[in-house]
Length: 351
Image (tube, rainbow, N blue to C red; front, side, top):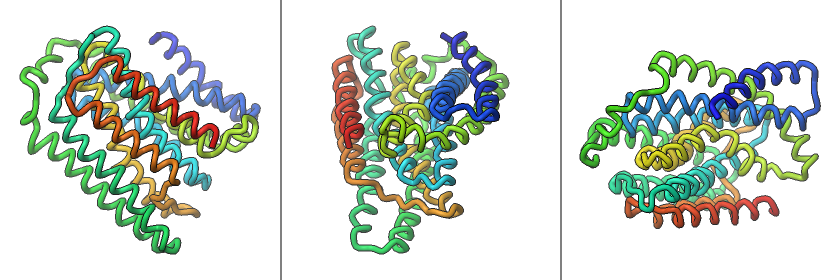
């Protein structure tokens, strides 16, 4: 599989450049760009997995989530520049649904087939549950409710205020988990579980590949955004569907693969940290950062989602909390999360 992704990267990047210069049809280029980004994301995932072996499960999961979300952040910035506000908001929704339902669901399902019962840190699960409730149900719902009686300028001011608070709380959450309370709620021997594992790549090689892959993703993502309109018209896809399903899956391919691999290896602390940690990073850092970045473009993006997007995200949070709060899981719980994702996917496709 690694050889296949390597071939796709070394073939996909040059073909993306050539196809762009020769103005190949947008539908064909859309497929090429998506496949190339997924292959690059796989390399980013392998790099962060190597770094996770050196750094431990918490920092490793954070690195994986961060660089996985970097792909979507890059795509979203170019989409903002192109004025595709609906696609960006939909992709943020898709990331939340994808991480909580698709990634966690596949991880629980694949790991549960191999192991009848898998455990992860229950204290981390409960800590993350509180943040999920705050980030999605408080910080996302409140702007939507108040925006009903506000003009555009006030709605944007509210969005900026909420964004600043979200970023600050996210940074404090990292400080709490990685500094002041590092190891306080840790399972005995949790850090030592990875001590005898050898990373695939050295730290220097992993960082180099990570940097090169991120740069390549930035180029391909910029080209991908320009194909959305024609692809949507060709297949009858709305901006909402492109954002929620297509961009979210392509943009989060790295962490999708990494979380499933970790679950298969029974490293559930890392798998859950990737899925839930990535969701928190999207909601509390990426989304507010995009709101602030949009101020520099022609069209600003308020932190106001549509009602279907909000209901879907709140439902995903509640289902995930109920399933994961006991600190253990199995294949059926994974299947339940997947069922919820596909139900919502059908709804967004038909909307």
